[in-house]
Image (tube, rainbow, N blue to C red):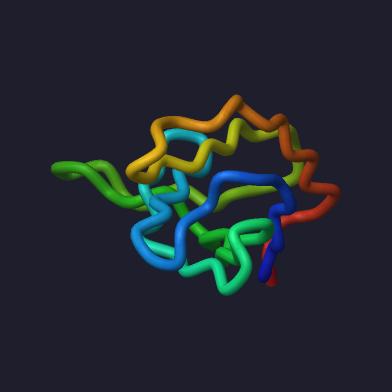
Length: 82
């Protein structure tokens, strides 16, 4: 599921999106006012624990770049990703 965040202070490259503790990697912003990312379908597995599906609920989202860390956005996911 693709999401677009609108705000200010995004950079052309190097916007690292964190979705509920999952670092999603670098996202670009053409205009410094929006950044796109994809919600993962599962939490990554650690050790012998299998991956866990992401379901409906509220999730914390932040963006980190050379300007610092954004305020935390609470994102409401109405249904899990397909």
